[in-house]
Image: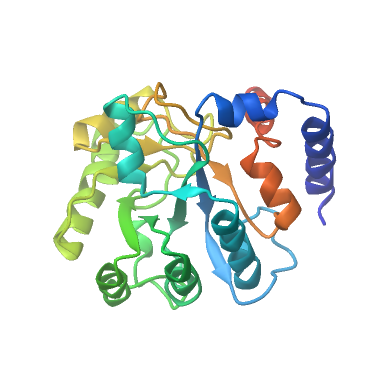
Length: 270
């Protein structure tokens, strides 16, 4: 394992075992999480230090854990509607998201989600669609639509960092991507996920462009949970990958890695 990830796990163990308030902070106050996945691979990818892959057998174990521990898995759109209506959600509410549009979201993730009746959202980068065998194509997306497991959002047109882009570029990344997806998928696309999604990768102009394009919410990769008071255009997410065996996955759900948000903020200023 990469030294940085080893350190991350060590700090998480300390934070988890010595934070007596973690369940108060995460569950009793009605906070809820949005999980972020990328590629659901056939096997473990040994050099994935950026945590972009999750082996399908581990993904299966993680979904089983949610089911056996009575997590309420709801679509992102429902979560956002509840926030906008100031409607409390039950404890242990979870949304599942996938970024970029990997082909294995269909071949590996979809059957596992279907087994448990879980619905999820794929944030699609439009220029990735059908670009190679690695990515979902339009026929795949229509198949997923027919299965009723996934809803879709935009992950921009070209996966650029949105910070300091010109107005016309922002319109393309948000607006054009939305129009293309709606034309092909014949459904409303009203959720957006910022490419890269952390501090420094987008700015207020990008948030304003998301709103102007007609999205009702947008998702970051800033670590942590959300509440009904969260800004719908700055939703936090919890990254899940091969790093999260069943023990780490349980800790992720209880907030043991939420301290990582501070490191994300510090790293932005370095």
